[in-house]
Image 1 (cartoon, rainbow, N blue to C red):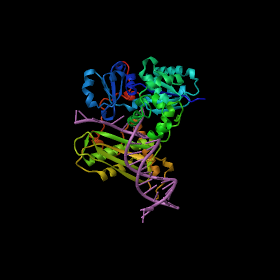
Image 2 (image 1 turned 45 degrees about the horizontal axis):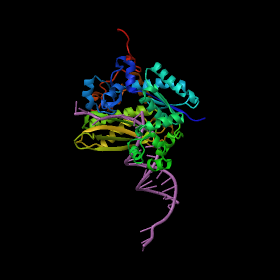
Image 3 (image 1 turned 90 degrees about the vertical axis):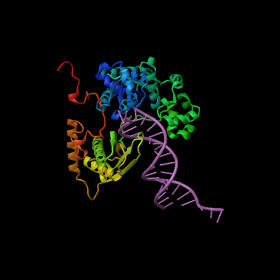
Image 4 (image 1 turned 120 degrees about the vertical axis):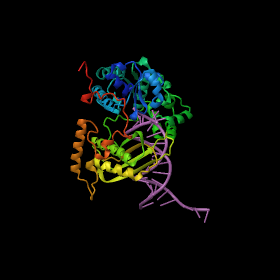
Length: 426
DNA sequence: TCTGGGGTCCTAGGACCC
DNA sequence: TCTGGGGTCCTAGGACCC
């Protein structure tokens, strides 16, 4: 049986989630901002038509938004994550193997569906998702994941396809690939684009026609895979089971600038708290954490970028251990006289706590730590993230310069009882 | 005043070993 | 003038993704 994949994703996903809960947003230009209300990361068609580019900094488009009546939201990840889960629950009914590729994209294994029924399958799928969740989608179908992604791009930009593009047949690929620009190929970024251009490639059809060995020479194995995949020969499998993650990071820009060690330590302590939550949520631990902070490349003052790695005697995911390490690391690399714009914590080489090497001396009381962390997580789950934090995070100063901005966030309609929609008068 | 955050994979090159 | 030949492992950095 020849392999077949479908890629389904939400149209202007974050904006569409906002629209589900506020019909007044329909047919209006809407954008959703990145963390810290920095840049536009999701735009409806109406907003794109006004010339708002992906990643446009808010301070540069503020006037335009005001003038044109663009509705602006901060990111509401609790809402988008929950909508994403609902959409995937729908996909589960349509395919036995699915790969959740990102918050708004999933691959479905379409191999069992007969080729002549695949397009119809795509239409059924997006109609059901729209009816059950309210989110509009597009579906791309092809014999490889790269072609399914490509088909999805075509479906997005070609209204007469009504949201579904099927590149199963050779004829369909001969028709469409010459119309797809290099930048729309999955895995081809700016650098590869320039190299392909030098080879005379202008479209996906040109890339498919390249000699795979030549592609490997200039673009490594990644390039060779792309050529094969564009020709319909699968090199990238569906990953139905999510692989264990390899690293974990918590990094944030500050709403203002941080100029004191005390405030920097509060910021990294807050990041350490979040890192602990993430590690425990994934059932993982680490025996080191890298602390970094730097000034902004956009500021005119003196610039500085530093990092340090703090090792633990044994792997841990205890918030208190992480907070201590973060503060210690921050002090070690601290230097005054700079206006720091961003700080973060990163770890790699995550391990399952049970498998990790135990330290012989100075070992933590694991059972005690586990119970305390479980209680902490349960409490924050019930009362909202940040309800209980280590004292080092500095509750009294939480409104300070390092805090991240979310000034225009919509209610968390689906995950907070006190924020659900209320119909009629109270 | 204000420019996101969090991942993965690949390669080159150095350190080290026999 | 001559100055081995591989292996492996680790790290930093590039490229790309959403």
